[in-house]
Image (cartoon, rainbow, N blue to C red; front, side, top):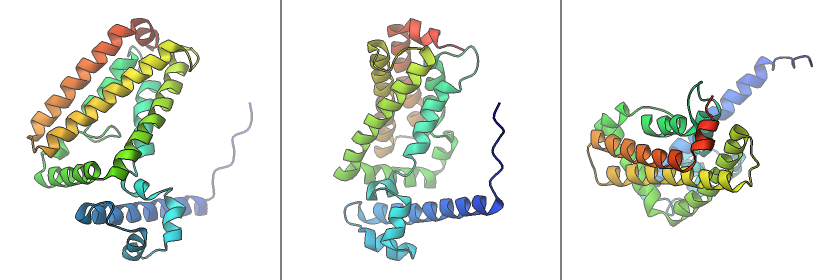
Length: 228
C-alpha cells in the first residue's frame, strides 16, 4: 500500500480558511444587495466596492455573477449524492434520498425549526422572491438541474453496478430529479404565499413521500438492489 501523503502544513490550512471566509463574506454582501435591489440591478463593480475587493478578486472565488447568489450549489449536490452513496446499511436509495429531502429545509442540511423563526422565514422568502424574479437566476437554475442530473446518473450507476448510459439508470435518475424539482417548487410556492412553517414542512414531506414511492415502484430492482 502506498504511503500516506504528509499532512498539509499549517500555513496551507490557514490560507484555505481565509479564502473560505473571504468567499463567504463576498457572497453575503452580494446576496444582501440582490435582495434589496433585485439581481439584475446590482453590478459586479458595486459588489466589489461594497466588499472592499476588486472585481478580479470576485472572479477568483466565483465563476459568474449568478454563483454569488447560488453559492451553495456544490454543497447541495454533495448532500444529495452523498445521501445515496453514504446511506446506512439496510437503506434503499429512495429511502436515503427521501429522508435527506424531507428532513431538511435546504437539502444541504439544517432542519425545519429555523423556518419557525419569523425573521428566518422572512429572509428565506426574500431570497426566494429575488430568485424567482430574475431571468438570469432562473436560467442558471435550469443549468444547475442539468448538472445535477449528470451527478445523479453517475452516483446511481456506481451504486447499482450499471453503466451511466443504461436506460434504467437514466430514467431513474430523471425521476429522482423530478422529485427534487417538485420538492423545491412546493417549498418555494408555499413560502412565497406565506404559508405557516408547519404547513410548508407538511407539504414538502408529502410530495417527497409520494414521489419517492413512485420511483421505488417503478424500479424496485434498482432501488432495493442498491440497498446496503
